[in-house]
Length: 313
Length: 313
Image (cartoon, rainbow over all chains, first blue to last red; front, side, top):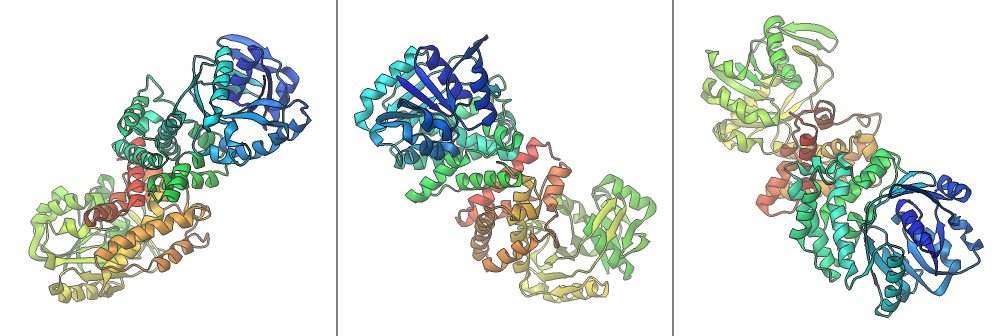
């Protein structure tokens, strides 16, 4: 099974390493120059549950990938949302007619982008709770346990979905087939949408936002906007359950003292955010379905304003 | 004419000094300990259009004001919005049945608070473009020109309004009687409501916010929310005119490089803001009139969240 990981950041590296260790033929594709060059030269280094390892995995810049002579059976997408379209364009030449594409990006609406390049029958969507972090170019830290859920977008894709679940299981990645993976994608996006943009704008951690008197009203309004839009797509979000889940994250013994990844991207590293694929996606869908989502809209606008003010790239 | 200035910050000091210089019997009332004590000891110092002057004006803490034996003809309110109610309570003992109260606070809805303490016939509302700044306790800087508009709230108050206009004119304060002073109060609140909260949350100056791609959409939505609520109160705001006025403030040769006063209060000095009397007032009124104002609501909530996060007092 030839597998391409498009987007070899922290999570892409985890999947690449674990699939490669399990004997699959893996290639990586990424745009970060220092990272790609380091892996080309030294292999992909990882502290894998405490053990220092190096996996020699071929890695390509998107513009180089046409040089790869074999064609790919499965592409796993782990890019930043903003890079999805350009990476799909560059890997097009190495895709076969039946190459499967599994999208594990955070956020909403990626299937609309992927469908422009890939037949719907070959698209799978997934959602993972695995974690990973980048130590520096060519080096990642992989700790703890996780799993991922996936499902075919088109009914005809179920058999292949089950095949991929098996490959992921064999690699220790705990893949599960889910009848309604879109629900978990929406639920995760809603969790992120209620917290990440707000903590970024307010320049605060999850716990401090949670402690404010207004936090309950803000997250309730955002969750309700997500739920109203999701309903049109036949996803019924459980507003109370998600609210409880969010409130549980305020606990300093859990992730309360963390700054959301969007805060790390924008405030700490002056990078563009994925807001267009979280609150921004709900606003765009809401507009299409004629459902007002003013909180999602203003949060998206404020994050974009902050990106411009900080000169994020 | 005995005049009490309730709230002797920068602007209250300007009015106190100019009315006192013109021969009126003026007292000041303020809560800032160092400022009040300095004025008690040394008089109110001012750089008044380049000239260093000292005006010996009696000043009181609110809790001391009962000791003032004379009763007051006119009270000019220049407190912070949050202090309005408590200062009205403390000056109550020195008010006569026909003492006039002129409110020059920024923001909306103060007449509702004042009406709880003062007969509507004695209330005047005003709006000023005079400027002033505090140099330190007991010392202000007064430069440039200005004017103020005022009007009685109750039709029966017109005669007194004209009398007060004359006093202000005689003191060089360029008072004008206006048939629709509420219009200029709303217009100024709308200008502040479109910019101040947003620049505070984004921690940016007016110019940098104005340069973002989203600024036009954000200010348009906010102005429209103000206009929809104002309309219920028979104030017809000119959305396009206000939008042009706001865009003109982005000019670095005007006030573009300034941080709005709310930013100075909260981000620079960790003080509570007047957001409840600007966007917050529009949200409360909108709720009462059943008009959705989600941008004003979220801006109010975000500013309050930031106040709590910064421990503002």
